[in-house]
Length: 443
Figure 1 (cartoon, rainbow, N blue to C red):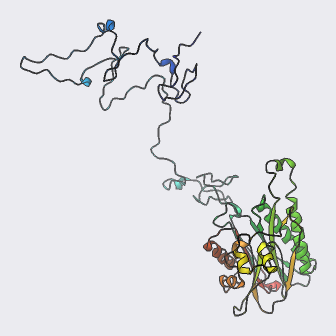
Figure 2: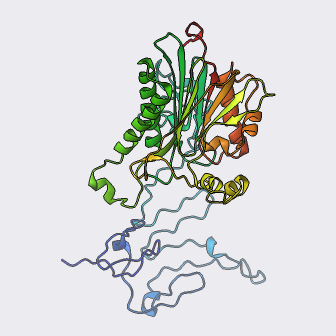
Figure 3: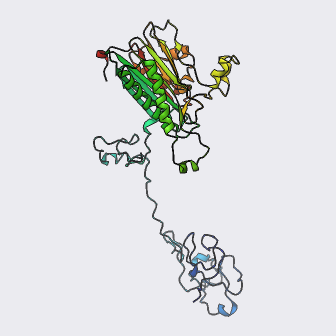
């Protein structure tokens, strides 16, 4: 049986275009079968919008009659259309226009939308009912926004839905007399830096302090994984080698090589993983590390992360202990540019050495020093030294009590970079020289 639904080009309720055979509007749900059949002619509409009935039907309509005037001298009463009762084309009385009258919904129109609430839920919990929220169990991670809800495995609050900061957005660690701080900065969407700090007891009973700082190469894939792997492996390698009486400078060299193997391994992905991004570079990062003993200072690096020496007696000059693997450093070394000109160039931070499967050739740099006075070694990524490039600027930014308050000093240096603009991830380790005796070291 063929449908009796009139063929319409658009919904009479919402003007949504229709297709042949539609019985309901796909947009608003209007019942198209309720639309009356189109008349054979096009009736003329009166000013009030009602259609004039054909002449043969006019006599059958019970038209309302206005009352006659009260007397000959009385002018005819004025009536408004709303004063007269009437019916629709089906004979049903028309609704009253009284303020409290509610018109009946048109047939076929859906009104199943839920009623609007008096109040909308807040992003954070309503303080009027916050007291009713159960306190999370001890040991449960608590939301940083509402301070009451637990955090699910996806990193969102189960109470207010607030996304939680990632663990690596800001990291701090203190290991005895040395400390490190890393921060995402103000412009990057994640922290691609990583660090590792620790201490080892040498065979003679003295203490060695170790700090590793890595900066993920943003143009590579998974730079955060590269920096994390390199920092962990390099630190573990150093601590183990020092405990086994390896010469510190040799231990640093071997630790950098071990870190490079760890980063290279990240590039060994299934071929299907590379199909979606065939032109991405392999995971990569830079590395800088320091070993401090009672009499020796050893640094090692690949890339443009740096180490600085700042003496406790600020009347003595500070010094930069590393040379960048970068385009700018090459220009200066070749005598083609001054240092100021080279580092002002937009190509200055293009690195020529890094850890990663696509590095041209691994060339770990190491250097050993025997300072004749106490001081502090600042080990950092370019997210810090961009705002304190020279050794003098770094010394000026470093608190005077850095040797005895390393964590506070690392925080101050990170704050210095953030105050300067925080354009990059910022990571810094503060290591005092000389390393204290074993009895003076606390975990």
